[in-house]
Image (cartoon, rainbow, N blue to C red; front, side, top):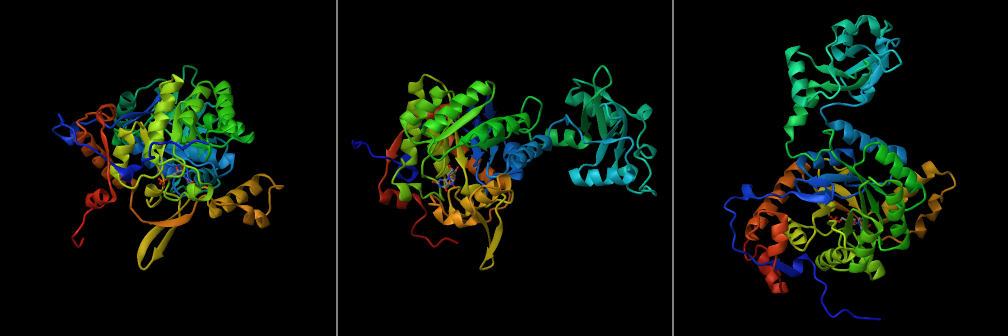
Amino acid sequence: MKVRSTKGLTFDDVLLVPKRSPVSSRNDVDTSTQLTPSISLRIPIVSANMDTVTEYRMAIAMARAGGIGIIHRFMTIDQQVKQVSRVKRAEGFMVEQPYSISVKASVNEARRLMQQHDVGGLVVTNGQDELVGLVTQRDIVLAPDDTAPVASVMTPPDEIVSAPAGVSPDEARHLLHQHRLEKLPVLDDSGKLVGLVTAQDIVKFNRHPNATKDSKGRLRVGAAIGVKPTDMERAEALLAAGADLLVLDIAHGHADTCINMVKNLRATFPAAQIVAGNVASKDGAKELAQAGADAIKVGVGPGSICTTRIVTGFGVPQLTAIMDGVAGVAESGRDIPIIADGGIKASGDLVKALAAGAASVMMGSMFAGCEESPGSTVIRNGQKFKVVRGMASLGAAMGRKAVERGEDESAESPEDWDKVVPEGVEAVVPYRGHVGELLYQLVGGLRSGLSYGGAFTIKQLQQNAEFIEITPAGMRESHSHDVNRI
Ligand code: XMP
């Protein structure tokens, strides 16, 4: 047994000492960072892989704002793949596999397909990926005969304007405008369809200049996986669907199962970006880094809905955990980022987490109140709230078992629920509107924080950082006090 003599500190235990600043405007600072060695973000913020926080709507909004969302794993592989695909299809100047319909299909089938996929047009093919027409809403909306073949209403091949493979966004924009088109098929040398550019996509492509995008201009998204043997299958399916990173999501990541899973993933998918966690110690971070992870997620028990520390007695106050994680990665000899996960209550905590050495920050309950989160909305005393729940809460465990039963009929029955020992709670958080507005406030706080830290970049903030421990009186002084707030 050993007792560490240094105190474990968390965000409220410290403040950052202001530094002489060369920054004259908050607009001059750069909030970009590395999520992993090959994925950069314009803002260092990640939405948590929790089932009341991140599904495709949150992931799209996060990536558009310059952060990223991690789709939670408490659904079937198929459902999670669909979530990832929705993000990858949301934006990008070219859709690679546009929805298509056979030339032999009817007008009614075209209408149904467009409704089902929520798109305004379909490419018409002859069954061999060869483009034989284009059909859009305009062609079918007033078509008198629903049973007529699509061929009778589509734009025929000799009237289609197409672009060659490799067309740039500017060239595509020019062609679409020149011919006053809505849709532009992209064909390879042999005339095979390789994609579709729509006018809407070009507009969206330019609307979010800070968006986190892959090399094809699609929004980036992460997806969580576990450590069961079936999770290798899940990983493969998610990567095939275009997931930009896999987040190995284990409450106690400094475990043989997690280390072996990282090694397995590394060997099987050498090019994949793998985030591993969660850990809260130097050795935990070091060993996951040595196993081949591309970023380490730090945080055991700081989360707003976590009760791990109360139920198990384990955890490390988050600021110390971040610093220890950074030290562990340094000892591993690898240069990979730390993601600080949990416990962020305000933008000041975000600044402290970054100053302590994290490259980015994951947040759950702050985002659970947003319009884009999947959690349900409740009204209490006339005020709107959204539900948030710990992924180790009783409710989440019950939900998980329901998914497992869907996948595997032999899984435990509802009577087994009482065997769950929860390490998280279910709660409500005030409704906060769109996540873009919340991010604007958080990033505004970070920009000011960089200025107070005499830093143009997050790296400089870390180099300049000087923390000072404070007392409860200091904390009281930090909040507004001795006034009646309106
Ligand atoms: P915040 O404070 O941003 O924290 O809401 C989000 C993080 O909390 C973790 N998490 C849990 N931890 N029991 C825990 O001990 C749980 O049930 C639980 N659910 C989520 C997770 O790391 C998340 O990103």
